[in-house]
Length: 410
Image (cartoon, helix red, strand yellow):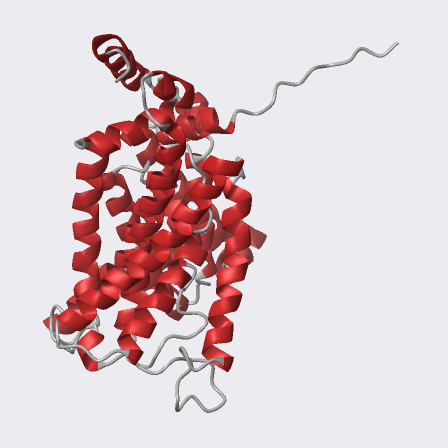
């Protein structure tokens, strides 16, 4: 006679709260372990190190030196390609890598804030790519089909990108609130729909297709008045997009930590049933949360649409929608955490070509990123290895109880 075993269903909301409740210590440890994994792959793929293994017992120091050389060369190139290049002929050339890190980090920070906002409400917004592409469509239309005065033009294009992305997110929230549709499924499916629609507009529709595109899939270049202005002159690619990202960090912090709306969002993320008992409209909060989440992604869309001087292409989204998930996880969905995580991942993007120059595949950086997220997403493993204390999650529960009993749930 076989004995049936009842398996408890996985509580994904509880798992998400566990991942996001980790402190600075666990995050730093995860980053260090991620770099260690990257170093391991640098070593085992290095020809000199593998050759030295043939006489390891006769001269072990030779293998250790080879291992140290490849790791030092790899991460040294990463620093030179993303922070400061001491070999540059001029100071402008020496700091150029850092400006590239900031430029590439801008859209990652903005999109990471959006995905992180969804996480804080217990929602898995996997549709960053579709929402970003929707913002690209709106911003590109304004930038290439409307003639407006300087400053006003790129401001209107930025607003269009935010609105275009937010409408997609709000639609997903509406489906979840009214029909109970799982936001993971709907956002993933909308990714395919919107990206395909974007490709159609670029190749077979006058709405976005460039008039001089020939056989190339791209839009017309944005009007000069619609492009984001450079921050340090035309010799650097860094533009206003990074300032928009920093502004988004400040807005996100105020929204989630100081505003009444933020309290409601966090309350629903902590416990929808308790939030409902406290008088919070959970269904409306879902719509608002996903709309706001996508709005932050729209800032990244504006950056991508208005930074290009040659028109947008089907690859202008640059995978930012998916990278934003890792940024949000690494940053713990907090404003400061996402800012730092975005800068780190921006440095990876900026330094990838420098690593390749020294003979190391830039895919190693992808391994580092994936390993960091893997350790972040496995909090029990990190706590077990380093004997870290369990997360504290009582503050929101206390706030909900206080609201419920002091205000009668109103």
